[in-house]
Length: 314
Image (cartoon, rainbow, N blue to C red; front, side):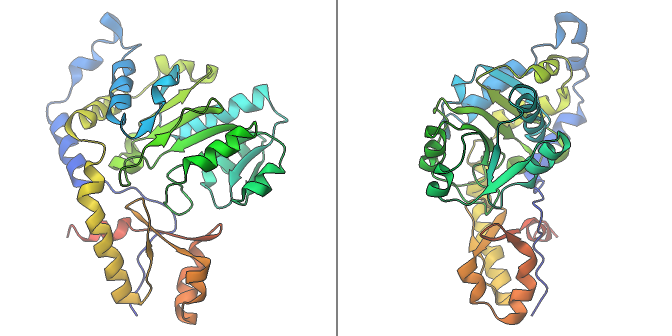
């Protein structure tokens, strides 16, 4: 049996097309954009780019244009921290929830603010028994890379909960229209880290129905180069380009893993991920179980495939 080269944490794949685009941008470095800082100014630089982002995902996300407060952020993580800060200030006693096995960044950011996040089983009857509070939910889900049904999020919102939807994996799945129109979905987080491999460029957008006062400073303190890159991405590609090109590679990788290890990983909706259920785990040999056990996440097992994508370039 060959070594399983999947990763427990999720590392974005710095797609070759994106590298090529950035090389083109920086070959003739856009110094002129930075020289506009005094006149006409860069305070509103992100606004037309944010509009392009909304248009880019118009067929994928319903209702994004309905969020009146929009901020350029360092991926989705900055938005998470500032939304938690707002909860800490305005509703410090309100419970905060995530689904079991969710992205650990919610818990860790909250802990830094003296807040506690409770993980909850994905069971609507269990959820109904909870005191209403704030929910942080990733969709596509960071738990296993699969798309959560809008009905689940809307049911949680119908119970009087305030929901923050983290769409960090938006653009890495087959076509699906995510519904963000429920009034109790109070904020939506987006990032270009996972979909385009721009993790270290730190570019994302936070959409909120109410002001996030601590993000007001992004009017001045923002990464202009990353916004330039984002604008070029929105101009050059379509929202389904990456998935259409690389989903077949995901299938090839899973076939390779099965051939090398005998482990048949399930294909996740997110193309850089794979997963197993607990029932799948029970069917493995003892040796395979030992290999897979450390990938446990909530009710299942999650695997990042990025290393295999990288190896295909050599």
